[in-house]
Length: 137
Image (cartoon, rainbow, N blue to C red; front, side, top):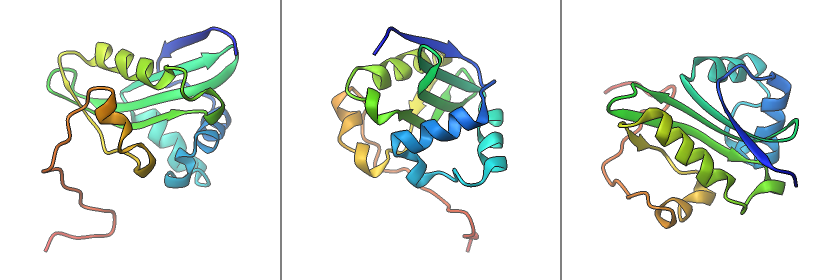
């Protein structure tokens, strides 16, 4: 593995992006077979931080933020071959720095539930979700 570099911006090659999601296991929970939806997810995020090992996209933090109060970290993905090297933490640090002073909020993937408290996140027991297809009663 070479030196990891980081970039801010969402002008990404769609094939590289989809391949990263698949290589990170986040593709199990994202619409990676729907290219238009994946393109829109990247294009509509207003804060994207990526990690690169040379020309290889190895990580992404994809967020929506107002830059003053709340930043929703929608996706944090690191290629499995590059995990456990601090790339995820650095993506979070850089996302937080770009969005300051906004609070960073996320929904943890099932495999990462124990990761976030370990790096300093507080659990929030009153989060709620209205899933696609479900209507207000």
